[in-house]
Image 1 (cartoon, rainbow, N blue to C red):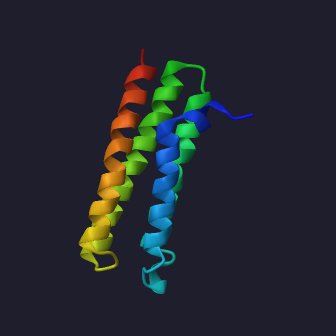
Image 2: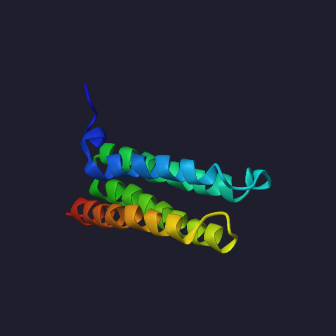
Length: 118
C-alpha cells in the first residue's frame, strides 16, 4: 500500500533533489561536515518530510503550514547552494543544475499551498 504523499509528483521530485544534493556535497571540505554540509542536508530532507507530513493533515490550515515550511526549506537550499558556490565548494554548473531542480518543485509547492487553503 502506498500512502498519499508517495503519489505526489512534488514529493518524488524533492526526493531526487535530496539525492542530487548529497552527491554534490560529497566534494565539500571535511571541515564543513558540521557546518554548511549539515545545514543543506537538513534543509533538503525537510522539504520532502514536510510535504509528506502536510499531506496527512486534515485541516486546510495545518496542510498550508507544512507546505509553507517545505517551501521555506527549499529556498534555504538555494541560499546555501549559492553560498557553497561563493565559497568554491560547488561549481556554477552544479548550482544551475540545482536551480533547475528547485524551480519546478517551488511551483508545485506553491500550487499545493494555494489549493490547501481552499
